[in-house]
Image (tube, rainbow, N blue to C red; front, side):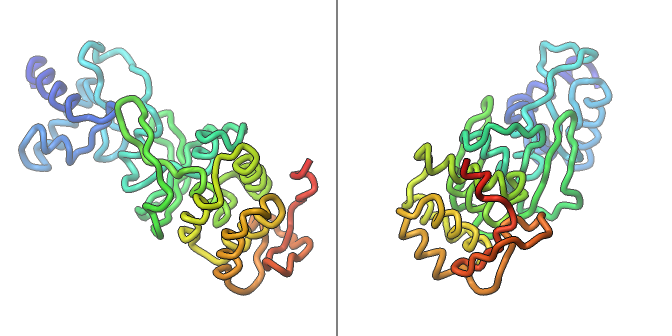
Amino acid sequence: MSIESSRTAIAKLAGAASGGIITLEAAIAVLGGSRLSVSRRLSSLVGAGWLSRVRRGVYSVRPLDAPPDVRTAEEDPWIVASRVFDPCYVGGWTAAGHWHLTEQLFRTTLVVTERHVRRAAVTIGSGAFRVVRESRNREMGLATVWRSNSRVRISNVDRTIIDACAHPDWVGGGGQLISIFKAGVQDSLMTAESLLAVAPAAPTGAALGRLALLLDRYWPAATTVIEYAAAHRGTGYVRFDPAVARRGALNTRWGVWQNISFENADS
């Protein structure tokens, strides 16, 4: 492929790229030809240094004014995730940090996807990702934010907390769950109405048991949400933090073993 035709192809790919990222399917639409021929053409552009392969079927488009032999900056991991793991959203500790629910920094971007994933820990370029699968009520409680010129979906404050009640490890464990919940209440980042609207996204009764315990302790005025959680939490007992082996004190009202120190979290 000549330099001129390469530039023409790159110009077309750059125009169709979102945040500098383009998929094989999008490349087929703009370049034309069969899947095999376009795939071979993209491979040729990768070999020439015009593209970088982010992952199979996903490419980063080098700016036209950047020489092929000069390394360019890595793409925004949120944008990479939205292309590689689509349909997906940014959630867990990454969303908590975005909404200022926590000051703790995580180098790994947490992504929630509908796709089957072989490994939870994935590295793409210089970006590290924790990829988890969840398909129930995927649209509920999601927001859209702009990163560069790309729209990326992210769990809002309420959905981030509901997700964390179902999966405390998504925010770094039970202690962090308490911390982000308290931040959401104290900083008025959510209302009882907004949390109630997203509560049906809880995939298990265990999630609602943890939520009810948090509400009862830190936000007793949110009576409508407490009543919903009480009616739908199910039966049985669960550990507040599933990653902690010990049981701790049993809260019989909500069926939750308080197996981490709430006293330290209250300080």
